[in-house]
Image (cartoon, rainbow, N blue to C red; front, side, top):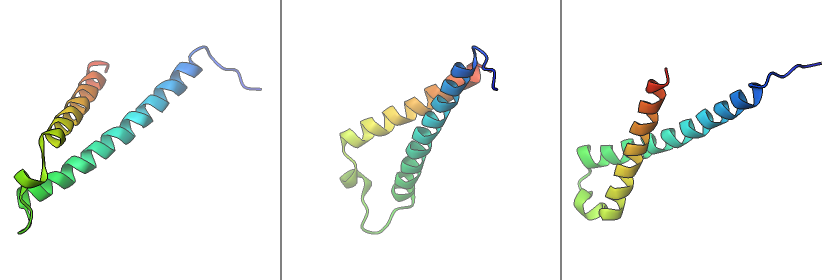
Length: 78
């Protein structure tokens, strides 16, 4: 027979949130890294100003701000 503490649900939910955030952050990081490589190291036929429009820039900034905020909040809680 298992005895559950009143905190077991909170711990489980916190673990699920960490997993969801980790997955989202990994996806953002992978995409930004891939795009950065193309932009910085380039290819002969790749012109960043022609490939990325304002929508992409806004999304990249929003994603970077999300990652920064998430990491800052995690460090402030420790």
